[in-house]
Amino acid sequence: MLRSLWLFAFALLAASCAGGSDAGREAARGGVAGAAPPAKPVSEAATASASAEPSDLDCMAMALYHEARGEGDAAMEAVAHVIRNRKDDDGFPSTVCGVVRQGGETPPCQFSFWCDGRSDVARNKRAYTRAEAAARRVLSGQSADPTEGALYFHAERVSPSWASSFRETHRSGGHIFLAE
Image 1 (cartoon, rainbow, N blue to C red):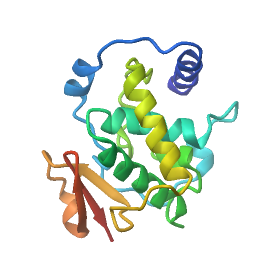
Image 2 (image 1 turned 90 degrees about the horizontal axis):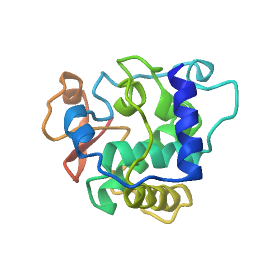
Image 3 (image 1 turned 135 degrees about the horizontal axis):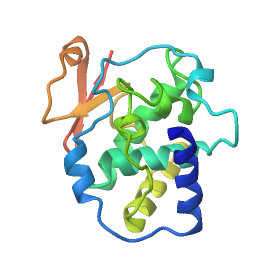
Image 4 (image 1 turned 60 degrees about the horizontal axis):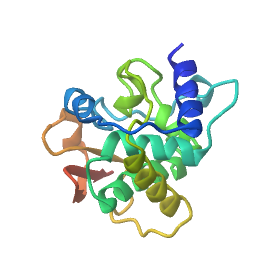
């Protein structure tokens, strides 16, 4: 059911992005990618919809919007590189949408916006446009990876137990980026 709502949210977004503030949701969520211990291989069938699938650009833009919209373009691109790095790593799903949805719609999942039970509609058109531009730059290879191949990240304000197993490669926009 949440997957259907998510796809419906994309349809609404494409038709008309409403203005507004997501500050309350962002503050309440406190979510970060990797809030759960980083997952390794999961069947893509478990994370992909059998019906119309959003594009890699759509999935990455939504992830950047929800994970880093309050941060600068450099921070958004760093998050995008983690998603791309995972897509290119044999230990993760081979599509951007598979990476973003890994873990399913119930916690623990890899990207908190996907499994927090809240609407994924992008209400701030300007922030979504920035996220989409950052996603496009990274997916097209127009952005160098500042994370040195990081596969994980978390907010600076948290200290997940799993993070000590990895080496820090970069900090940007309130996030710490980690590699194996």
